[in-house]
Amino acid sequence: MRIGVIADTHGVLHPQVACVFANVDHIVHAGDVGDSRILDALRELAPVTFVRGNNDGASGEEIVRANVGELRVLLTHVLPRPRKPSSHVVESLQDEPADVVVFGHSHLPHNERIGGVLYFNPASAGPRRFDYPVSVGFLESRDGTWRATHVALDERSKGALEQRMNQLSRGTAGL
Image (cartoon, rainbow, N blue to C red; front, side, top):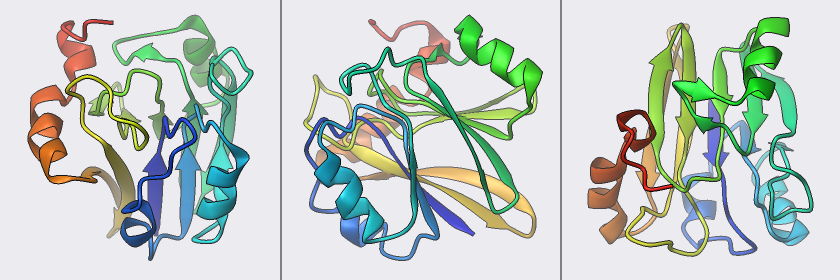
């Protein structure tokens, strides 16, 4: 099972996304879609589950749950930090556990396991913001174990992924 993870497209679908997501079984979008045509284009590649973000006419704190294969996914747009999630996320996880929390909003890549839950932000796949990476991610099951990876969508973003990875837990995100 291979799940494509995308967020913060803001109405722009990077031309590399179709190639990178060519063989995924499912796609999750963690908000700030920006235009329904983005979801239509993604649906041509695989089934899509998404949550609305604060730029999609929502608060950004909505939660969408999905079971994709054996993986229990909690999607939200605004977390804001994996080690200090908003009360709406904490309460939802207490009510119903998840294997992974996929979030967006910060445009910063994140891939960290905390208390047995994977917190994953693919960063932004839309317009470049500051010196942040433009990227997507994958959740993949191999031998019953799920792992997450990021994929830079342009050459400059490779270094930015390394530089900005898990910055939300280092407390230097500049948000």
